[in-house]
Amino acid sequence: MLYKNYIGGEWVDAKGGGTFQSVNPATGAVLGDVALSGPEDVNAAAEAAASAFDAWRKTPAPKRGEILFRAGEILVRRKEELARLMTQEMGKVLKETRGDVQEAIDMTYYMAGEGRRLFGQTTPSELPNKFAMSLRDPIGVVAAITPWNFPLAIPTWKIMPALIAGNTVVFKPASDTPILAWQLASILEEAGLPPGALNVVFGPGGQAGQALVESLKVALVSFTGSTAVGRELGATASARGKRVSLEMGGKNAILVMADADLELAVEGIIWSAFGTTGQRCTAASRVIAQRGIAEELTQMIVARAEKLRLGDGLRADTDMGPLINEAARRKVHAYVQVGQQEGARLRAGGETAETGELRRGFFYKPTVFAEVRPEARLAQEEIFGPVVAVIPVDNLQEAIAVNNATGYGLSSSLYTRDVNQAFQAIRDITTGLVYINAGTIGAEVHLPFGGTRGTGNGHREAGQSALDIFSEWKTVFVDYSGRLQRAQIDVEEQKSQP
Ligand code: UN1
Picture 1 (tube, rainbow, N blue to C red):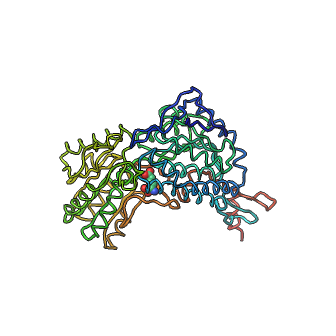
Picture 2 (cartoon, rainbow, N blue to C red; picture 1 turned 180 degrees about the vertical axis):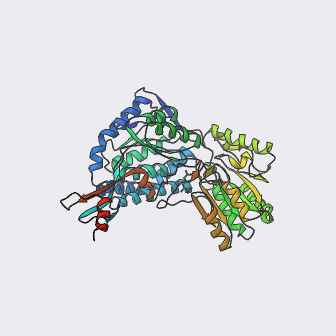
Picture 3 (cartoon, rainbow, N blue to C red; picture 1 turned 120 degrees about the vertical axis):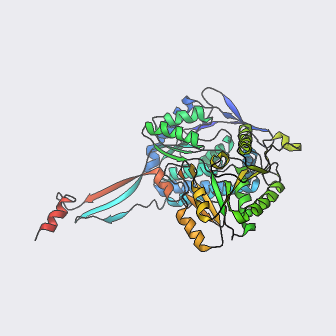
């Protein structure tokens, strides 16, 4: 099947006629051909979004919400089918792709409900016979540029709040997962979204993404992906005066204190480090362990990591799927070599997994390094694969200092039974997400999501904060006094009157 672009409510070929393939990373099977878009296609999509904007912003927000509710219902009905398709397109195991679809459902329903809220403020004016309030206005055409690791969830984090706030959207999904993006667009079409409110262009970032960020029709760029690409897109967009929201890399840590429930901590570590094959921006790639228990904890992690079954995520007995592509596998292996050169001790994995059926996919063994120095590249740079580095420290203060000392700031977790230590950590950790006695992954859609330092640029997706990205505050004063009232000045004069 050929998956076409969706522009102005029509499914259309790329203007240049080119296509690329979507491939199953576990088996190498080709799943479909996809329109390969260039600047012309992107401009047509941005044009369609701009034309649809006026009617969409004037559609009452509760009506916009009804369309989102219907989309949510379709997602619910098709959950299992979409999860299976997602496992085939990006490799993560079925229970995780079900979670991804569920996150998309949750976000869609949550933002549908916002159609009847979108609250502003009303507040007394400082002057008599004057009314003051704030309203949310849409911004215009939103470019949503999304990664492949959450092929449905992350697009909904951007598209649903953008739409409910009255913006129109050009969606450029990662070229590793176009089919799930196509499905999302067709679900919104079926739900009754008017033509042009959402447009989709497929293709690699270098061509399609770049043109989108440069388009004069686009008012806002919302990007999730690598820090290197995000910074570049952000600079291009900012130079053109666009609003930019960036959600980028992570180097997340799980801090384990000597008093912690180690069994529980290991559960959290295995799930956070090797879930999605370590390909989450929230993945735990560092374990910062108090010295007394560091070796015991490492042994427990190694024992569990070695038992993980690699394979096709569609199989019920698979624990960990492949990496997304060969380039990703090469990058992971290069970091393993860096770790060894840096003197870290390789305790598990460290090589591709190529026995039997695994030869067909991009598999890499769950990898554990021990005695890693906090400043080592292995402990500082985002690997985006199944590699975890154990860093020994003396106490909580040192653990927090090591945790905070990277160029990223997304998620941290602390395992302890000591409530005082837990609250100290909550106070002193400088990442956007903090978990106590849970791993680094597991964000919920109605709370702010995002990070500090190289992870973001100060915005938070999800929760109410998502609406702040996708709307502009308009402050309104209505003076019904029938005379000129001067704010600040007349107040002073009233005070000085006897
Ligand atoms: C991401 O990895 O880009 O908390 C997002 C989590 C998920 C979202 C991750 N709910 O890991």
